[in-house]
Amino acid sequence: MSANGRVDTPKGRTLTRREFLNVTARWSIGTAATGIGGIAYMRGIEPNLVELKSVPLALPRLSPQFSGYKIVQISDIHMGDWMTRPHLEDLVSLANNQQPDLIVLTGDVASDTLSSELVAALKGLRAKDAIVGVLGNHDHWSNAGAAREAMQASGITDLSNDLYTLERTNALLHIAGVDDIWERKQRLDLVLDKLPGEGAAILLAHEPDFADTSAATGRFDLQISGHSHGGQVIIPFLGAPRLPYLGVKYYLGLYEVGNMLQYTNRGVGMIYPYVRFNCRPEITVFTLDVPGAV
Image 1 (cartoon, rainbow, N blue to C red):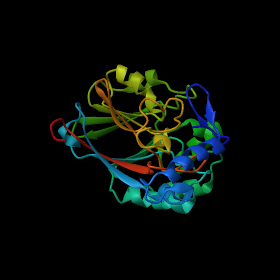
Image 2: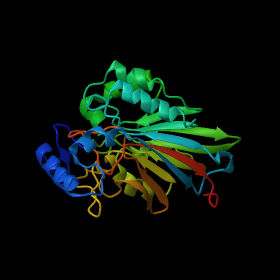
Image 3: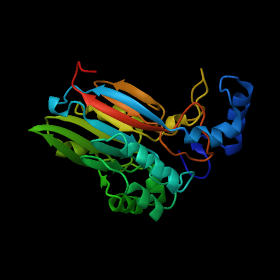
Image 4: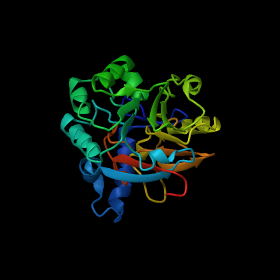
Protein backbone atom coordinates (compact mmCIF):
# COMPACT_ATOMS: atom_id res chain seq x y z
CA MET A 1 0.00 0.00 0.00
CA SER A 2 1.37 3.37 -0.95
CA ALA A 3 1.52 6.88 0.35
CA ASN A 4 -0.35 9.84 -1.12
CA GLY A 5 -3.80 8.56 -0.22
CA ARG A 6 -3.95 5.73 -2.74
CA VAL A 7 -4.01 1.95 -2.66
CA ASP A 8 -1.54 0.27 -5.00
CA THR A 9 -2.31 -2.65 -7.26
CA PRO A 10 0.24 -4.95 -8.95
CA LYS A 11 -0.36 -3.28 -12.32
CA GLY A 12 0.02 0.23 -10.96
CA ARG A 13 -3.70 1.03 -11.00
CA THR A 14 -4.98 2.97 -8.00
CA LEU A 15 -8.23 3.71 -6.27
CA THR A 16 -8.69 7.26 -5.03
CA ARG A 17 -10.09 8.03 -1.60
CA ARG A 18 -13.40 9.18 -3.11
CA GLU A 19 -13.75 6.06 -5.27
CA PHE A 20 -12.81 3.78 -2.36
CA LEU A 21 -15.31 5.37 0.01
CA ASN A 22 -18.03 5.38 -2.63
CA VAL A 23 -17.60 1.65 -3.28
CA THR A 24 -17.52 0.65 0.37
CA ALA A 25 -20.23 3.11 1.43
CA ARG A 26 -22.69 1.98 -1.24
CA TRP A 27 -22.26 -1.63 -0.25
CA SER A 28 -22.22 -1.20 3.52
CA ILE A 29 -25.27 1.09 3.63
CA GLY A 30 -27.22 -1.23 1.37
CA THR A 31 -26.67 -4.42 3.39
CA ALA A 32 -28.10 -5.53 6.70
CA ALA A 33 -25.23 -7.93 7.30
CA THR A 34 -23.17 -5.45 9.25
CA GLY A 35 -25.84 -4.65 11.83
CA ILE A 36 -24.30 -1.17 12.06
CA GLY A 37 -23.04 -0.35 8.59
CA GLY A 38 -21.83 2.89 7.15
CA ILE A 39 -18.68 4.93 7.16
CA ALA A 40 -18.96 5.75 10.88
CA TYR A 41 -18.56 2.08 11.74
CA MET A 42 -15.70 1.57 9.28
CA ARG A 43 -13.80 4.61 10.50
CA GLY A 44 -14.56 4.77 14.20
CA ILE A 45 -15.44 1.32 15.49
CA GLU A 46 -13.94 -1.63 13.65
CA PRO A 47 -10.39 -0.16 13.48
CA ASN A 48 -10.35 -0.35 17.29
CA LEU A 49 -11.74 -3.89 17.57
CA VAL A 50 -8.41 -5.68 17.77
CA GLU A 51 -8.64 -9.46 17.43
CA LEU A 52 -6.24 -11.74 19.27
CA LYS A 53 -5.94 -14.49 16.68
CA SER A 54 -4.79 -17.82 18.10
CA VAL A 55 -2.98 -19.97 15.51
CA PRO A 56 -1.65 -23.37 16.60
CA LEU A 57 0.91 -24.71 14.13
CA ALA A 58 2.77 -27.99 13.78
CA LEU A 59 6.18 -27.51 12.17
CA PRO A 60 7.77 -30.64 10.70
CA ARG A 61 11.30 -29.84 11.86
CA LEU A 62 10.39 -28.50 15.29
CA SER A 63 12.17 -30.26 18.14
CA PRO A 64 10.07 -31.40 21.12
CA GLN A 65 12.06 -29.00 23.29
CA PHE A 66 10.17 -26.15 21.59
CA SER A 67 6.73 -27.72 21.95
CA GLY A 68 4.32 -25.01 23.11
CA TYR A 69 6.64 -22.18 22.06
CA LYS A 70 4.58 -18.98 21.81
CA ILE A 71 5.25 -16.25 19.22
CA VAL A 72 3.24 -13.02 19.12
CA GLN A 73 3.16 -11.14 15.80
CA ILE A 74 2.52 -7.42 15.45
CA SER A 75 2.50 -5.95 11.96
CA ASP A 76 1.86 -2.70 10.09
CA ILE A 77 1.69 -0.25 12.98
CA HIS A 78 1.95 2.73 10.60
CA MET A 79 2.83 5.27 13.25
CA GLY A 80 2.39 8.73 11.80
CA ASP A 81 -0.91 7.93 10.13
CA TRP A 82 -3.96 6.89 12.15
CA MET A 83 -1.98 5.25 14.97
CA THR A 84 -1.49 7.24 18.20
CA ARG A 85 0.82 6.56 21.13
CA PRO A 86 -2.00 5.71 23.60
CA HIS A 87 -3.50 3.23 21.15
CA LEU A 88 -0.10 1.65 20.46
CA GLU A 89 0.55 1.37 24.20
CA ASP A 90 -2.73 -0.53 24.54
CA LEU A 91 -1.60 -2.89 21.77
CA VAL A 92 1.75 -3.39 23.49
CA SER A 93 -0.04 -4.32 26.72
CA LEU A 94 -2.27 -6.72 24.82
CA ALA A 95 0.77 -8.43 23.30
CA ASN A 96 2.58 -8.61 26.64
CA ASN A 97 -0.46 -10.15 28.32
CA GLN A 98 -0.04 -13.22 26.11
CA GLN A 99 3.26 -13.93 27.91
CA PRO A 100 5.09 -14.64 24.65
CA ASP A 101 8.41 -16.39 24.32
CA LEU A 102 9.12 -14.22 21.28
CA ILE A 103 7.58 -11.09 19.74
CA VAL A 104 8.02 -10.46 16.00
CA LEU A 105 7.29 -7.25 14.08
CA THR A 106 6.82 -7.77 10.37
CA GLY A 107 7.34 -4.31 8.95
CA ASP A 108 5.82 -0.87 8.40
CA VAL A 109 6.30 0.47 11.90
CA ALA A 110 5.85 3.96 10.44
CA SER A 111 4.21 5.62 7.48
CA ASP A 112 6.03 8.94 7.33
CA THR A 113 8.22 10.38 10.07
CA LEU A 114 9.44 8.36 13.04
CA SER A 115 8.83 9.88 16.43
CA SER A 116 9.96 9.53 20.00
CA GLU A 117 6.39 8.45 20.81
CA LEU A 118 6.85 5.33 18.68
CA VAL A 119 10.02 4.41 20.56
CA ALA A 120 8.46 5.15 23.93
CA ALA A 121 5.54 2.82 23.19
CA LEU A 122 7.59 -0.02 21.67
CA LYS A 123 10.00 0.03 24.59
CA GLY A 124 7.18 -1.47 26.62
CA LEU A 125 7.22 -4.77 24.68
CA ARG A 126 8.21 -7.79 26.78
CA ALA A 127 9.07 -11.35 25.73
CA LYS A 128 10.92 -14.18 27.45
CA ASP A 129 13.55 -14.62 24.73
CA ALA A 130 13.64 -11.65 22.36
CA ILE A 131 11.80 -9.05 20.29
CA VAL A 132 12.80 -9.10 16.62
CA GLY A 133 11.58 -7.48 13.42
CA VAL A 134 12.11 -6.56 9.79
CA LEU A 135 11.38 -3.45 7.74
CA GLY A 136 8.54 -2.92 5.28
CA ASN A 137 8.06 -0.75 2.22
CA HIS A 138 6.72 2.23 4.20
CA ASP A 139 9.75 2.11 6.49
CA HIS A 140 11.94 2.49 3.41
CA TRP A 141 9.72 5.16 1.89
CA SER A 142 9.87 7.23 5.06
CA ASN A 143 13.45 6.66 6.26
CA ALA A 144 14.92 3.18 6.58
CA GLY A 145 17.86 4.38 8.65
CA ALA A 146 15.56 6.10 11.13
CA ALA A 147 13.36 3.01 11.28
CA ARG A 148 16.34 0.85 12.19
CA GLU A 149 17.42 3.36 14.83
CA ALA A 150 13.90 3.38 16.29
CA MET A 151 13.88 -0.40 16.48
CA GLN A 152 17.28 -0.46 18.15
CA ALA A 153 16.27 2.22 20.65
CA SER A 154 13.14 0.18 21.43
CA GLY A 155 15.12 -2.97 22.17
CA ILE A 156 14.06 -4.70 18.93
CA THR A 157 16.65 -6.75 17.02
CA ASP A 158 16.61 -5.97 13.30
CA LEU A 159 16.59 -9.27 11.37
CA SER A 160 16.63 -7.74 7.90
CA ASN A 161 18.71 -10.28 5.93
CA ASP A 162 19.83 -11.83 9.19
CA LEU A 163 19.28 -14.74 11.56
CA TYR A 164 18.48 -15.24 15.24
CA THR A 165 18.87 -18.75 16.65
CA LEU A 166 17.26 -20.08 19.81
CA GLU A 167 18.62 -23.13 21.60
CA ARG A 168 16.96 -25.52 24.04
CA THR A 169 19.14 -28.40 25.29
CA ASN A 170 20.94 -28.74 21.95
CA ALA A 171 17.75 -28.27 19.90
CA LEU A 172 17.64 -25.27 17.53
CA LEU A 173 14.87 -22.94 16.33
CA HIS A 174 15.89 -20.35 13.76
CA ILE A 175 14.12 -17.01 13.25
CA ALA A 176 15.29 -15.45 9.99
CA GLY A 177 14.30 -12.24 8.24
CA VAL A 178 14.63 -10.49 4.91
CA ASP A 179 14.64 -6.78 4.25
CA ASP A 180 11.83 -5.29 2.16
CA ILE A 181 11.06 -7.10 -1.08
CA TRP A 182 9.15 -4.28 -2.81
CA GLU A 183 12.27 -2.13 -2.54
CA ARG A 184 14.44 -5.08 -3.63
CA LYS A 185 16.46 -5.04 -0.43
CA GLN A 186 15.96 -8.72 0.35
CA ARG A 187 19.03 -10.96 0.40
CA LEU A 188 17.72 -14.44 0.96
CA ASP A 189 21.07 -15.79 -0.19
CA LEU A 190 22.79 -14.19 2.81
CA VAL A 191 20.18 -15.65 5.14
CA LEU A 192 20.62 -19.14 3.70
CA ASP A 193 24.40 -18.87 4.03
CA LYS A 194 23.96 -18.26 7.78
CA LEU A 195 21.19 -20.81 8.30
CA PRO A 196 22.33 -24.21 9.66
CA GLY A 197 20.94 -27.34 8.08
CA GLU A 198 19.26 -28.60 11.24
CA GLY A 199 16.38 -27.15 13.23
CA ALA A 200 13.03 -25.60 12.31
CA ALA A 201 13.28 -22.26 10.51
CA ILE A 202 10.78 -19.38 10.44
CA LEU A 203 11.14 -16.47 8.00
CA LEU A 204 9.89 -12.94 8.60
CA ALA A 205 9.10 -11.22 5.30
CA HIS A 206 6.92 -8.12 5.08
CA GLU A 207 5.39 -8.93 1.69
CA PRO A 208 3.52 -12.28 1.78
CA ASP A 209 3.82 -13.17 -1.89
CA PHE A 210 7.53 -13.73 -1.30
CA ALA A 211 6.38 -17.13 -0.01
CA ASP A 212 6.75 -18.62 -3.48
CA THR A 213 10.46 -17.80 -3.37
CA SER A 214 11.11 -18.80 0.23
CA ALA A 215 9.16 -22.07 -0.04
CA ALA A 216 11.13 -23.06 -3.12
CA THR A 217 14.32 -23.21 -1.03
CA GLY A 218 12.88 -26.09 0.97
CA ARG A 219 14.48 -24.76 4.15
CA PHE A 220 11.68 -22.81 5.85
CA ASP A 221 8.81 -24.33 7.81
CA LEU A 222 6.86 -21.08 8.11
CA GLN A 223 6.85 -17.57 6.66
CA ILE A 224 5.17 -14.79 8.67
CA SER A 225 4.11 -11.63 6.83
CA GLY A 226 1.92 -8.53 6.93
CA HIS A 227 1.69 -5.74 4.31
CA SER A 228 -1.78 -6.39 2.86
CA HIS A 229 -3.77 -5.36 5.97
CA GLY A 230 -6.05 -8.20 4.86
CA GLY A 231 -7.38 -5.68 2.34
CA GLN A 232 -8.75 -3.40 5.13
CA VAL A 233 -12.19 -3.85 3.56
CA ILE A 234 -13.56 -7.29 2.72
CA ILE A 235 -16.92 -7.47 0.97
CA PRO A 236 -18.67 -10.80 1.57
CA PHE A 237 -18.67 -13.07 -1.49
CA LEU A 238 -16.46 -10.56 -3.32
CA GLY A 239 -13.35 -10.20 -1.16
CA ALA A 240 -11.05 -7.20 -0.93
CA PRO A 241 -11.67 -4.44 -3.53
CA ARG A 242 -7.96 -3.63 -3.75
CA LEU A 243 -4.75 -5.29 -2.62
CA PRO A 244 -1.16 -4.03 -2.70
CA TYR A 245 1.69 -5.16 -4.89
CA LEU A 246 3.20 -8.39 -3.49
CA GLY A 247 0.19 -8.82 -1.21
CA VAL A 248 -2.30 -10.38 -3.62
CA LYS A 249 -1.75 -14.13 -3.71
CA TYR A 250 -1.43 -14.75 0.05
CA TYR A 251 -3.19 -11.71 1.44
CA LEU A 252 -5.02 -13.07 4.48
CA GLY A 253 -4.56 -15.86 6.99
CA LEU A 254 -2.93 -19.28 6.66
CA TYR A 255 -1.77 -20.95 3.47
CA GLU A 256 0.24 -23.98 2.42
CA VAL A 257 2.90 -23.08 -0.12
CA GLY A 258 4.66 -26.23 -1.19
CA ASN A 259 5.91 -27.80 2.03
CA MET A 260 5.94 -24.45 3.86
CA LEU A 261 3.22 -22.68 5.81
CA GLN A 262 2.57 -19.00 5.13
CA TYR A 263 0.64 -16.72 7.48
CA THR A 264 -0.44 -13.14 6.67
CA ASN A 265 -1.48 -10.90 9.56
CA ARG A 266 -4.13 -8.17 9.01
CA GLY A 267 -2.02 -5.55 10.82
CA VAL A 268 -2.94 -3.22 13.66
CA GLY A 269 -2.73 0.09 11.79
CA MET A 270 -4.19 1.47 8.58
CA ILE A 271 -3.30 3.62 5.63
CA TYR A 272 -5.41 6.32 3.96
CA PRO A 273 -8.39 6.23 3.72
CA TYR A 274 -8.61 5.06 7.33
CA VAL A 275 -11.38 2.49 7.17
CA ARG A 276 -11.81 -1.19 8.01
CA PHE A 277 -14.78 -3.38 7.24
CA ASN A 278 -15.12 -7.11 7.90
CA CYS A 279 -11.36 -7.04 8.45
CA ARG A 280 -10.52 -6.32 12.07
CA PRO A 281 -6.99 -5.35 13.13
CA GLU A 282 -5.07 -8.36 14.39
CA ILE A 283 -2.40 -9.47 16.80
CA THR A 284 -1.49 -13.09 16.07
CA VAL A 285 -0.50 -15.61 18.74
CA PHE A 286 1.26 -18.64 17.26
CA THR A 287 1.72 -21.71 19.43
CA LEU A 288 4.23 -24.12 17.90
CA ASP A 289 4.19 -27.86 18.27
CA VAL A 290 5.58 -31.02 16.73
CA PRO A 291 3.67 -32.87 13.97
CA GLY A 292 0.68 -34.80 15.26
CA ALA A 293 0.21 -32.55 18.29
CA VAL A 294 -1.94 -29.90 16.57
